[in-house]
Amino acid sequence: MNIKNAWKPAVAPAARLDVFRVGLGATLGLALAMLLVFEGRQLGFAMGLSLFAPLGASAVLLFAVHTSPLAQPWSCVAGNTVSALWACLVVSCIPLQWAPAVAVGGSIVLMQLTRSLHPPGGAVALLWALEAQAGVVHDWAYALWPIGAMTLCLVLVAMLYHRLWGKTYPLQPQAPVRASTAQHLPAMDLSTADLQALLARFDQGNNLTAQELGQLVLAAEEQAIARRFGSVSCGQVMSSALWTCGPHDSLASVALKFQQHPIKSLPVVDAQGRLLGVVARAALLDWALAQRTNVHERRRQPVWRLWGKKPVHDTACAADLMHDAPMHVDASTPVSQLLETLTHHAVPFVAVLQAGKLAGLITRTDVMRLLLH
Image (tube, rainbow, N blue to C red; front, side):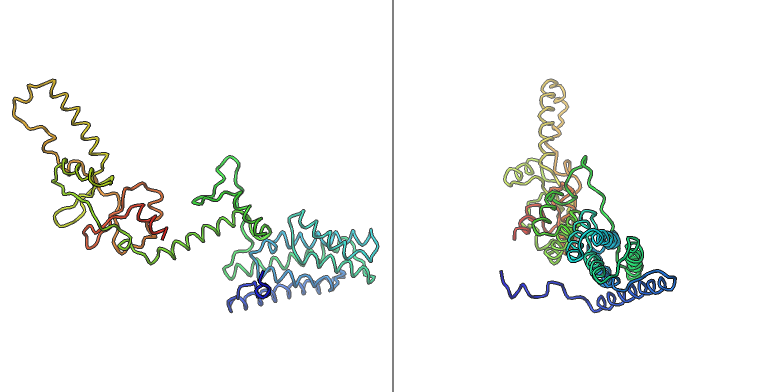
């Protein structure tokens, strides 16, 4: 372990606008909470300022790291309230010299059990126990008012403030994965169990859910694809060594090209090099099988030969078996635009055109070769 690097800042540098936004939000939130304290005093409620201190830590989470699970509304309000209620029980049941330690340790346990882990909750429990040692005793209702009320006030301010800035708070919970459905997230080979194992491996279970990690992985994959293929055009990837045929080429010559080259489809171009369509090897085989069947039928009925007509298969050409080209792109098209199409559609190739003429072909093998490099 590099000790020097361990002491370097782990928090990414914030943008100047974010620095201003976070500071202003915390100021507004705490000012409103403080106003609530003073108004409560005017109405005769006991509102100690010492327990107001943990709200400063809550404000840091709510406005600076509002995407953290520790800063979500349930964690903030329930975490502080549960900690206060536990501290109230502790100071009434055990000697006060042990109360601070037991109050903090127990509050951490309860916050985890109620899924409301919130670091300032530990400070609430500690200050409650310290005030009891100083002779200031609060009843259980103090946990709801003012502690719970002030925390709720701060959360509501944060919700409104982040919305005004176009931020998402609170985080929207992901729909649970039903057991009857596949456990794989869409477009990704990692299952929910795999994602949970990764969170446990890097000790990030309190910071992310499996669904949130899955979204990050997918976004990272999309970003990597855009970076890797965004500057690569189809013209750079295509295979320019073409085997083509003309629309009037005999099917015997087409069959010979299929025999000479390991291809499944043969582009059909005119004299100017424009793409007209494609002849598939399977279509040629089907035609040959049909012609063989027809030959047997003609042998059974030789009278038809007296008319002097040539067999149909002698005049058949590539145009008779040609189909439209499945897909074509321009040579300047980024390869990244093809990836999703090639993933969801079983096309034999993608024709690359340049100035309207066939310049090359892109197959899955070409894309795989690019991925490997």
